[in-house]
Amino acid sequence: MALWKRDTKTPPPARPAAPLAAPLTLPRGEELAPQPKKEKKVSLKTDEITTVLGKGSEFEGKLHFEGTLRIEGVFHGEIKSDSVLVVGEGAKVNAEVEIGTVIINGQVTGNIKAKQGVEIRAPGRMMGNIETPSLIIEKGVAFDGQCKMDTGVKAAPASFVKPEPAKVEKK
Image (cartoon, rainbow, N blue to C red; front, side, top):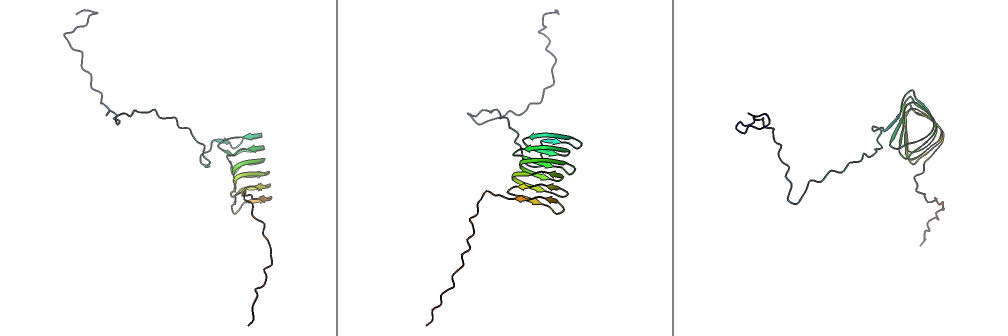
């Protein structure tokens, strides 16, 4: 037996066979195409929060965001987005808000202009004016302000024309 020369008389020890996976069969002419990356789309559901300003935090300034923002702390300033803003139960927001949708469970002071809708849920408090096409206010909510609801459809002005009495012919 040589050190560098392989002994051809003794076969190498047998290795246990690995289980084989069933081969993937495709119809003739078709190849397995690589799967495209799926982009995560931002949902407007409140259970899919993308950003949180947590309890105990305080922020002052201008806030622009995409996705869903939940504020649990204190915010002073201006908020602009086409997405969803959720004001938590213990939150205090003092801001001018231009938003897609806002859900208020806490306290908001300032004017809100929403493109889709505003929901004020108990024990929410809203002090300011609201401009939105859709407004939901639950029982137990405090709202001090004015609301302008514009659906974008202009109604035709009502005309008040006094109807003429019917003519009755006598025979």
